[in-house]
Amino acid sequence: KIRDLLNMAGGLKEDYDFSPTSQRIQRVMGLDIATANINIGVDVPPGTVFSHVNPNSQMLGIIIQRSSGKRF
Image (cartoon, rainbow, N blue to C red; front, side):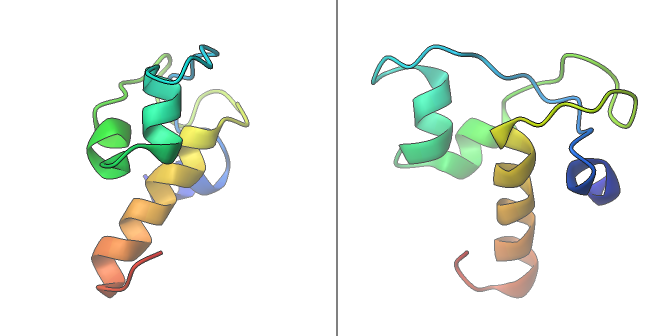
């Protein structure tokens, strides 16, 4: 749910591999961040655990971009 993402409780996985080809870097700076973020998967059921991780914000950006038709 959007509310879960806004509350940083999307349950989304985060890794801490900072190598240039890591999934983390691809989700933030890759050529196709939408696909990289959509395919991230979850660690816990959404809405159950607060976790301030970047994929929550990335997913919100994708939702805003697709619903508004404008780049975010």
